[in-house]
Amino acid sequence: MAPGIPAAMERPHFIGIGGAGMSGIAKILAQRGAEVAGSDAKESPTAEALRALGATVHIGHAAAHLADDASCVVVSSAIRADNPELVRAAELDVPVVHRSDALAALMTGLRAIAVAGTHGKTTATSMLAVALSELSLDPSYAIGGDLEGPGTNATHGSGNIFVAEADESDRSFQKYDPEVAIVLNVELDHHANYASMDEIYESFETFVGKVVPGGTLVIAADQPGAVELTRRVRDLSSLNVVTYGESETADVRVHKVTPRGLTSEVTVVLNGKFLTFTVSVPGRHYAHNAVAALAAGVALGIPAHNLASALGKYTGVKRRLQLKGEAAGVQVIDSYAHHPTEMTADLEAMRGAAADARLLVVFQPHLFSRTQELGTEMGQALALADASVVLDIYPAREDPIPGITSTLIIDAARAAGADVAAVHDKATIPEVIAGMAKPGDLVLTMGAGDVTDLGPQILDHLSS
Image (tube, rainbow, N blue to C red; front, side, top):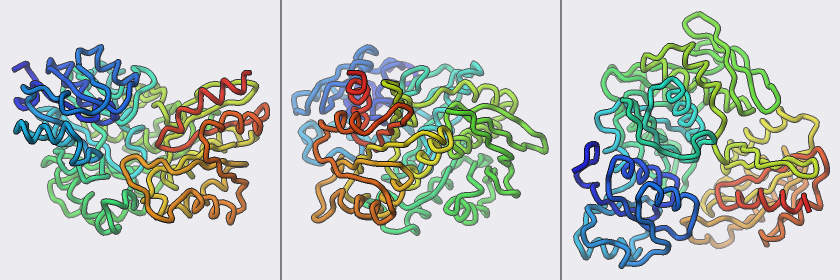
């Protein structure tokens, strides 16, 4: 067995290996020397990156893809029971390991930082990974998006710190035992798995309860859900609680966030001293994510002024207000926002960064269940744009829900005074946007589905 490889993962097979979470674990195992294999629905740059690390990646799902000598099969909650490779695993009596258990095993023996919250996990995790790398601490990390700098979502580092994005959607974050846990916010989402806010709070309480004795919880002081969670876990005697935010009572207080175009300057008060640093993405919510990262690093004993300087080296994550390019005087920016809070935050950030620009949005709703529960709020968020087009719902892992369509969002947007239109054929979007956009406008492609593919196409159409 190669050093650093859990015994059951010497020859892992990943079903859906190209996914953001799955690919990160596969990359780390490949870098540690495991014989990684897997399959994915379609070819992608991620599949090529995995092959470059020595992994075998099949396109499409078939029983024959699973080798007889596989040591385990790794799955996410999105893999259905009738997947042919999963069925074959049962026939061969190959152990099935959930993605979260695989990630927990990789963190064993390292100083783990687990970043949780309904929004902002990928950004805060990425900020930490970049800052710790800049300080030559060579962390391992697993993130739900590709860093702009290193261009990857995961790596096996030689240091003793492991930074991981902790997913609450299926309660998988309850598997981790971090030294430092970050909770950015707590809101109701993932309606297929959570029926109420009480269930959400219980899940986050379990996550926080897994922090190792003497460890630290870094948690937002301004967000109502986080404040309530803090109240619920304050009595955990072995837990150090560090709050951050604009509240006067915050342990790490955000004194000022100053917009500087597509960046921000952030000043915090830490241990009675002012500390100022730059965040390379616009918006108050991204500034708060950076402060959470700062507080987590300090909890590990890293000097605050070193971290502040290193955080300034963060250049963004793909799909988090990522500038895709400019053509005919129009900038095209990509946003992963798919929950109303995220949508509002990104739209407000763009308003702050370019107050005189006209903001055009291409929005693709993600999941029928989320649209059913939050479609009205999504429509209200779109009222912050000057004009929007709304695509059909991206189903991802879900089957349609009768009566739930993008019309729910469009009706709510129009009721809020928004200029919004439905476009059912995604292929026509580049032409539609090119007809709407004028020099000086900003175009935002928004959603967690394949709307991201439209950015380059829009730019090509604007250029022609």
